[in-house]
Length: 124
Image 1: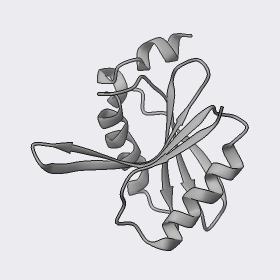
Image 2 (image 1 turned 90 degrees about the vertical axis):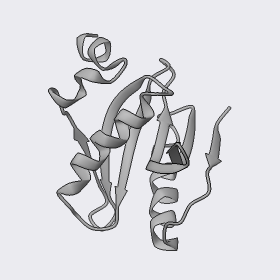
Image 3 (image 1 turned 45 degrees about the horizontal axis):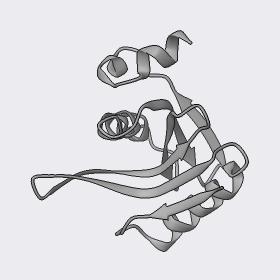
């Protein structure tokens, strides 16, 4: 049973289309997706996860979607993983660049020590 849940979003139609293309590309690898999930604390937006992809082993992979290549995307996906870890066990982190149609895995060893589930994932 595959499902895609959508949160409210203020992103551009082009960004939404890039997320849709990424979901179509990944749909056979995951059991469910949540797109553009916002994280709020004390009525303030803390951040947004572009795409959360749920694996069969219970972990959640986090995807940051960019229309063009940016170095800041790697820091942003790490920050997003910290927000996601409040609710889910984080698996792997990825940056998808739509202009190059490229998915790059991000491996932030030192910064991820505080994220739930990261140490167990790296050992196993």
